[in-house]
Amino acid sequence: MSLFALPSKGCTKALLTLFCLFGFLFFSEVVLAHERWILSPEQINHWNSQVRPELFSNLSPLNLIMISGFSLFIFGWVWLG
Image 1 (cartoon, rainbow, N blue to C red):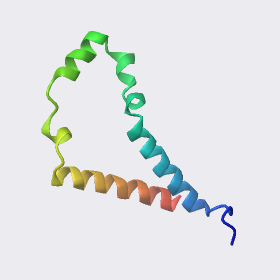
Image 2 (image 1 turned 90 degrees about the vertical axis):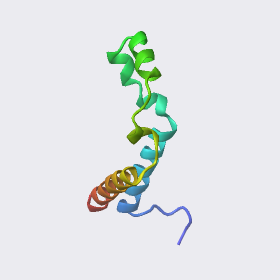
Image 3 (image 1 turned 180 degrees about the vertical axis):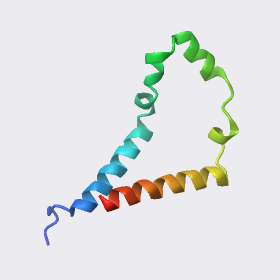
Image 4 (image 1 turned 120 degrees about the vertical axis):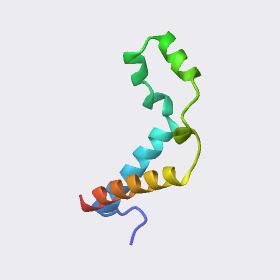
């Protein structure tokens, strides 16, 4: 088997999905770009200066359950094609 052989179709989908998810995490400025379409700069500054809810600012068992459940859903969706 060659190192340059193409991976299977399912593996390619899974790798592409992981690549996209990690891309969204590393380029969070792009993910938050929709704020500029709807809110004025003053509104963006106002909402960014507010304290974030605990659910979004701390790692908790609830967060882990939600992230794990969503990850399993996406993985299963990609796996089933």
